[in-house]
Structures are given as C-alpha cells and as structure tokens.
Image 1 (cartoon, rainbow, N blue to C red):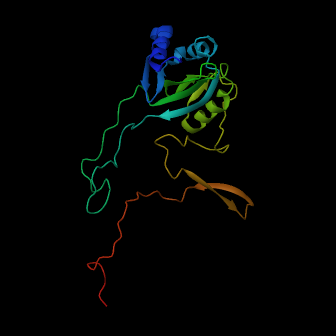
Image 2: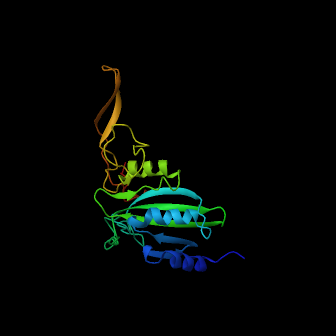
Length: 223
C-alpha cells in the first residue's frame, strides 16, 4: 500500500525540520516553502536520498504576487447594465500580503516513488535573486532562463542566464504585473531602410465593459 500524503508530509517535515518554512497539503498535493539559503541543499537531498528520489524537475516557473488575491471585477449579482467595476460598488477585494513579491515554483516528480512535490521559494531581494538548481537537475537550465526572461528573477550560479523567449533587444519583463499590456515598443518593416525597426507602441489599451444589446423600442428611431 502506498504511503498517504499525510504520512509523507510528516516524513518531509521530520527530515528537514526548521529548514522548511512550511509544508501544506491542499488539493492532493504538498507544497513546501523553502528559504533561498537552503534551496540547493534541500533539492539535492530530495533527489538523492532513497526515501525521496525526486529524479525529475518537471517544471519551474516564476510568480509575481503583487496584488495577489485582488479581484476588482468580482461581483455576485448582475446589474441592469451588466457586470462592471464601474457599476458594482464594493466589488474590490484587497490583495493578500505575501512574504515577497516574486517567487519560483518547482514541480518535482519521483518516478521511483510515484509521487509529486511542489516547492516554492520566495525571492525577497531587489532585483529578485535565487540560487540556481542547474547542478541538481539539468532541465532547470531553460526553465530558469524563462523565469529570468519573463519575470526578471536572477538565478545565481546559472551557467548562461540569457533571455529565452523575447527578442535580443527587449527591455523589461513581460509577465510582471506592472508591465504594460500593450508593451513599450512595436516593430515594423521600414521599406526605406529595408529592415525591421523598433518604434514606440501605437496601440492604446482600453478597458472593455460588457454590453448587452437588445431590441428595445425605447431606443429605436421613429421613421
């Protein structure tokens, strides 16, 4: 019979003790919060020790927790003019306080034990910095480059921390919550220069408010 998640949670806490900030069970998965100074040590133990054997890093992603939990479009009832933060008073819910704005989330898989584990490590520095786990799992190479490109998280010890998805001259990190939705620059082909050029973005973002269109004689023009 396989070990229950509750038993695995207790064994995880017993092995690492105070080096784990927390280990919570929710939605049939354990999420362990790891401090940056113990990240590489804990990841190495999770990979190598027979009781864990997490051989694979399935995914690593960055997170931006600014305004986390805030829902300025949240309403429970419709109004006569539809859903809108402009017509539903008191709909704004305040954001939740998090240990830091940025974090990296690691999804681990143990093929030997047929078990998954999620690690979360907050980066409290500015700019955000975390130790690289490339030496623990080689797959972290591209994952950390992606998190650096999109969120601006610096992974110290990474052998080649370059952008991965955006252009060579791209400025900023597009998955940050404060990055403008329309971006800062756009590209076009200049027939005079016969090359692609950058220019300030011309698209202006606008807030879309749902409209209800119905046939109503109050709005029909008389012949």
